[in-house]
Structures are given as C-alpha cells and as structure tokens.
Length: 386
Image 1 (cartoon, one colour):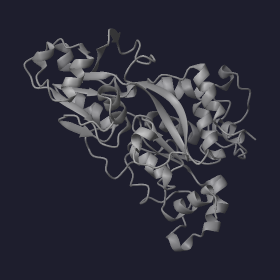
Image 2: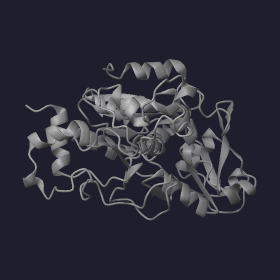
Image 3: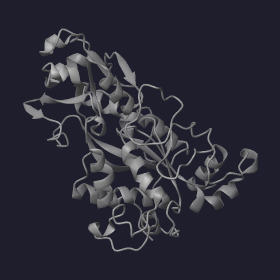
C-alpha cells in the first residue's frame, strides 16, 4: 500500500494543485465572491486548485499520462507544498510562503536578517530551513527546494482538503474538533499552533464617531440573538444595527459563537454572512451602521473601528489586552497536518515557528506571537531534523 506521501503526490499529479507565482503563490476558491478586495498583497485570483496546472509540470496533459510511480519520484523536490483554509490564518502562511518562494540570499540582511536571530548561515532563506530536513539547497533566489502554494478559503475547506489529500497543511482558526464535529476520530490530525488571535468587536467608523466605543458581553449576545436592533439602545444614533458575521464553515464563526453562546452550532441573527475575513472587513468599511467580529489582522483597516468589550468585570481593549488568556474571544490559530508531519511540512512550519517567523509573519500581521513555553512545545511537535 502506498504511503500517505505517495498518495498525495499521485492526487496532485492527477488533480492539479494550482498555478504558482514567483513568490507567495495564491489559489482562490471558486466560491469566493466580489464582496471586497483582500488586504494581503496577492496576485489577482486564479482558478480553483483543481483547474489550474502547475508550472512545475508543464507537460502534464491529463491523468492518463501520469503514473503513481512518476509522482513518487517527483515529489521530494518538485511537488509544491500545498496549504489552504482559514482566511484568518492566511496572512501568516501566505507571507511565509512569499519569503520561502523568494529564497533570498543570506547576504540580503534586510530581507533575511538571520544574524539578528542568532542564526549563523550562508544559505538562502528557504535553503536554510529546507536543508535542516534533508532537502538539497539550490543556492538560487526564487528557486527553493520546493515551492509553497497557499489557498484562501475557510477552515472547514482546508481541513476537509487535508483529509482527502488535496492539501499538505490545513489552516484553521478553530480546533478541528469544533470545526468538523461529526467525525468519528481525530487521531490522524496533527495540530501545529502558530499564533494567537484575540477577536476584536468592530463597528463602522460613523457609529464610533457617534459615540459607540464600548459594549458589554450581554449586549453583544443580544445583538447576535436579534434582541437589539437599533443603535439608540447602545447610546448611538437612531439607526438600525447591521449585524454582520462569517459564513458556516468559518473557524472565526465557530470560535466566536462558541465563546459568546456556548455552542458552536448555536443560531445567530445576522444581516449578512461572508466567506472570508477580508470580505467582512470591507463590508464594515463600506457600511455606516455595521457591527462585526474580525481577526486582528483586519481590525486596523480604514473605516473599521475596534471598540472595547466589557466582560464579567474586565475591560478588553484593542491594542492592549486582546491576547490575554482571560479574553473570552482569544483563540489559537492552527496549521494542521495529516498522519504526522512530513519533512517538507516540518521545514516550512519550522520557519514560522522560528523567532524570525513569529516576529515577521505573526506579530507583523497584528497577531500575538506564542510565548516562549508554548513556542517550544510547538517546535517539539515537529519531527527530528536530519
């Protein structure tokens, strides 16, 4: 019976994974809408992963021309690392992929300041991390040992794609146990926590300017249960509240509803739901009466104003203590692998779990870096280096 790595190589070679860019390769899901631009700097949307050919195998014309043996031979060096899922985790993993694919030399200290992090190397960026897991360095910019392809969808899609071999890494902003509740077993999922997010409550700029700068936990529950409908009830203008949220399958919705109502399957009353965090942030910016919950990476968009949350006697404010363990809307951000962690997956994840990765990809995207003890725990979950 072929190993899981053989199976994935075969699946990717027969159901093509997606177009690659020079850096930060991106795949957009077919269900994405035109609700608004993403905040991360990416290339224009491409076709779905199953429709777009990879640049690493331009001669592929169909499933009948690729054998499982061929895929197994190609996998170690040419098959891309494929990640997909949560739009909340996307900024972290996408920027990590951009750095990986650029593979800048050690002499480029602005891009790859290894000495500042106690790393003594003359290898290019991706070469350094890949070589620690046995991959041969290329020594060439924009030519890593294997490219990284990052898709943008939502947690449920990323986790489901992980189980059927379409993705190496399933990005999720809620735990797999709460996101895929009907599974009989979760034993094959390997959880890698890469960051912490403290979900801020945000309102449209006009609502904040009108005086709504704070909300209580009970008021927030009433808003999402449809019991408060006008901003006047919260000290704001005589205007209907436009309550916005994320769509089913979103890890952010799962985490928010679980924290607020105690049940990830609880029903909420919202005016509109959005597949991706980027779309939701844009909707808040375009509205004059919206309230929503967002990931930290999108809370500082123009026209989007975080407000304080009073919860059980404690005030939680954006930019101050949303990463605190006691904040009820704090949650871990996950990169799941399947049935252990391969050298390819480990090399890439190790770059995110490095001090440089936590500074650049996590804190640099407004998320909370893992404290030292948790960071070491996550590193210890990776397989031993060669």
